[in-house]
Length: 240
Image 1 (cartoon, rainbow, N blue to C red):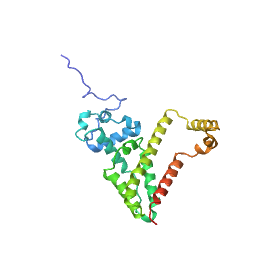
Image 2: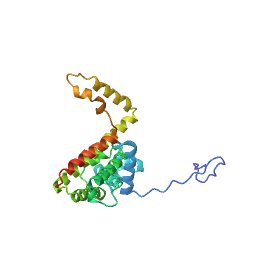
Image 3: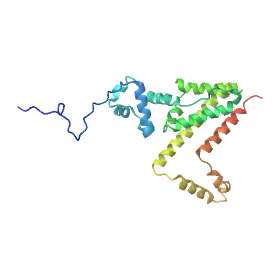
Image 4: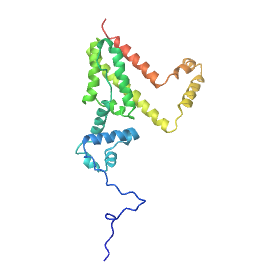
């Protein structure tokens, strides 16, 4: 009887490469799960992240993930916490420069959020609790307190500034998604400007006369303007 053949003990043909053994699997753990989820986030956006999708990427079943992560909500929080570790803070906090250093931190947060698709959606609906996120909050509170901002104002400002950064990053993520779909920003804004200019003068005289001004400036310029308005308003609470 001829046994069923296998290729295990067969020599390799001269023009073929010898098969390589599969690489050893990394042991499944929380860090690997979070790393994989962030990779999916960066490639596909937040909608692409699910326990099933992460498990598929890791070559396992969703049930095996639950030994390390309770549910998708926890996974998203862990992703945000990991990403928040990329935010750079000033080497030394200087309350005499609190306004400029607050802006530096805000810019770093915006850049990091924007570099990871729409992770800002997770930030928007979560109170910071992880050490990476709390170090950002701690630095901002130290700066505001040291600059003379009253505690209650500083506490609320921390929340409102985070919302401003989140919203800006979310808008940028949506804008990027539209660009991938073939959106032409030049034509769009030219069309909006033309539309404003043609509005009925009797009903919208100010908007039609300010069409160029209303559509001027890119996203970075507008973010800087909003940040400056926010910090100047915050400074008005400092007792002279």
